[in-house]
Image (cartoon, rainbow, N blue to C red; front, side, top):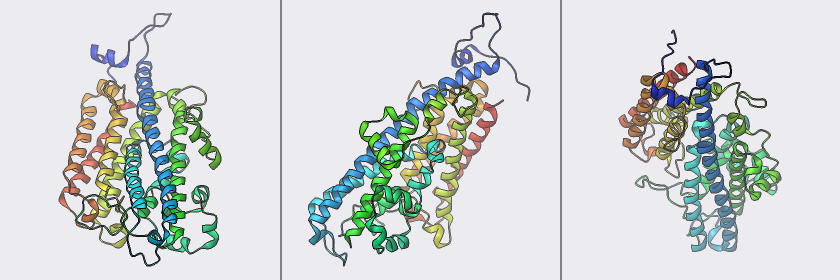
Length: 404
């Protein structure tokens, strides 16, 4: 398609003031695009990525500390809290700590889902995404682990992070240990665990995987903000776990086109932002929702995110919000790729904006908890699948347009 070099006053404002070089030559179309997308990339890093990872890391560190306290409390109240039969009631102290841990899990989980539009960079390069967000939990392997004295004697956050499989790590491992896995289907929200732990090894495992989760979340924050810009406590955590980031992803995107950056241009950075959005739209539609909603075999029916916390619907919703934040900006007035697309092809940009809102509305209208509808081919969840697929198509169109 032939490019038409016509700009309205509004477009000129969105692209930034157009100046001339000392020779009197106007900036090229590509220069104007780079100037606009530089603003978008910097705002994306500083106002979306780093604050999201910072909040997630803070919540994950708090969650890990609560799990340490749960283990200590359960051991101190072993007569009621560690019972091989699994029968009885937890002590009031341990129950309260578990309730706090569940709330902190929801908090950390929300920020993780709000980050899933940018699973490239550290999340991909360090394999943090599968490390902390694989599901379902491998219950059979967990039992084998708890029975293995050799491995359990070594169990701590660093050992867990280095030697356990993804099915025993991350958010869903912690979820399995602190929520009631037998909660009534009548409840729309997960319930706090209310029965004793069957053995002390379960508490050792909980503390280890929660500590590893915190380490991985802190690594994400440090990887985008710079090691020197996280707290001394977080720096020490990464040093102890030998997880210091080897690359500053925030600086790389802020300084696209310069030496040391992985991006040859701000256009490349913007294309990665859009692709990250498209990837999670596709995953929400076809993996997170459609596969368990329409599945007919055991594997698909168990392929449900956050089933014990009954948080699946919120997970999906927050994933689409992560797309909105990445594409439009997290705050009013943030420069964004949407701003630039609006000056290039307003119809395509509006298609994305409309598809984001339609996806959010469809998810909000679908019934919860999602785990109750596995295999039901629920029509409202099918509609949510369709809307998320339309969003993926709209983002693909935006990807095509932005490089023209």
